[in-house]
Length: 228
Image (tube, rainbow, N blue to C red; front, side, top):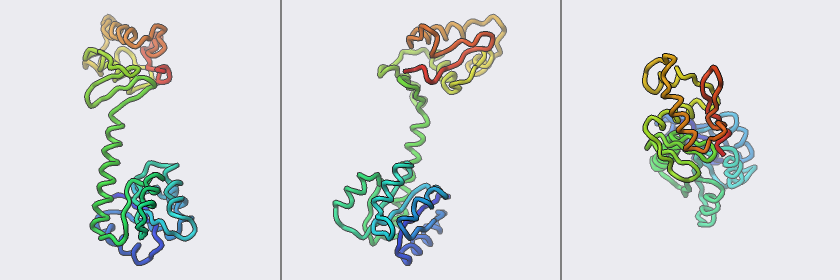
């Protein structure tokens, strides 16, 4: 269930929208004044905001700007104003969509679902990329970029770098790394992890072993702050 914060002073419209969206598994919190919007937003953070512009207490444009300063939550402006300046201004203040009243509830529902899909897609894409300074590791297409240039890594080097980066700031023993990479335990003799660590250090200019640190007697540590 998605939570909607509906900032609307027209009680009849707010009731209509709330009733309709609730039938489609949305939880709707109605706020009737602009100067009460931020308190509600902070108390019950919504998944999406539907915001009128002409509000008592505080103008909707100001509310939009305040929300955007704190959050990337999708904002849909719903207003009776028809001035194109308001649409441009709203989008510049951080709104994601702008709809003029009157609007059919089913159209509003479709707009909200589209906003939420885009937000979820963007979040998923961002989660698939690890970024540490000048280093980016894209898990979807298994590419690594270092200082703006694609890094040529073998399959094993890529997997090892990814495992280390996903545990950034934590020491991983050779046994941990071998189990994750090859499903085997460290026998005390296997030097494949050490050899691949050495190759990664050379490829990422880690001559002082600051990016991938050796923790003597324990293993290796990917230092998230050392990648420039």
